Length: 378
Image 1 (tube, rainbow, N blue to C red):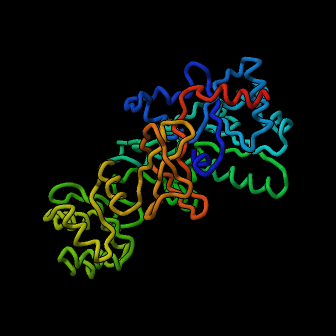
Image 2 (cartoon, rainbow, N blue to C red):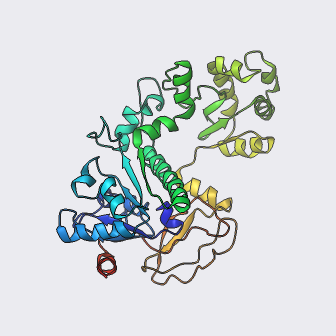
Image 3 (tube, helix red, strand yellow):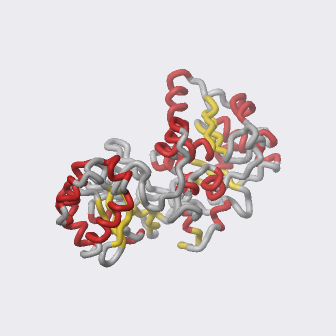
């Protein structure tokens, strides 16, 4: 979808009858469809094809011949079974960029199913996420899936750059486990460099303090102090400037060493006022803080900041709608949608000359089969 937003003509090949599994991942539903599917499939066309059917497979081979990029996320060996693996694909199209997304790579982990929750468990993310030791919790979104998709897109763009310079395609491989280990950044580096195996710390940070959730008078508030200057500002804002000179809290390593004592003192002070009141008084002092918003409040905040987080995508296939740029006017080329629109979250990438487009709703299963087949058979 990211590449489609940026202008790629994306053909989504789906099994007839059922299509993408996420079409059934509801509730919630909107427009009679699962919002899970709608969230990641705009700007695509749907081709229903049975790879076990000779005619459909021939069409898919022709699609490979004409494509710049092929993405596949079957278990390793599946595409080979249908004659569409990497070796065969590059015979059909030497300039093809072939991206293979797996759960655990194509070696010893090839047979393992790649579901986000499973990866969060096996990959260590749940071992550092949760309210307390022994209480592992998954993240509230399919974070490993999303991060792997981003890495796949980056790899494909690099391969396209190489193809443009040399005419040579290549195989791009990403897997969920490697992506997660890389994305654990400071936690994984603490292990590989220092042998430190991190555990669950609730909302605290292993290396920074105060960097956690506190209870204000009405609801939780986050304090995310990243340096000694910010801590001194926090102490002034709380009316406790002497804390900044306390030898237990004077430097960040001191605060980390005495994080429990620090949390008790700060918690008592923060409990005297509402989260909104603290946000309004501490933010001008340069203290990173804010209430724990629900999603509705988060979208509202983005709206108030001029980020325009929600964009209308037309119901009518191929139309466009006026889409204002974040902090700006309508995007170039925007026009009348007609037939209503579907509100989806904006692509986060801003480009001054070639902004993301929002001109095709997520496709219904097989919606473009005849159109694409006519083109492939011509």
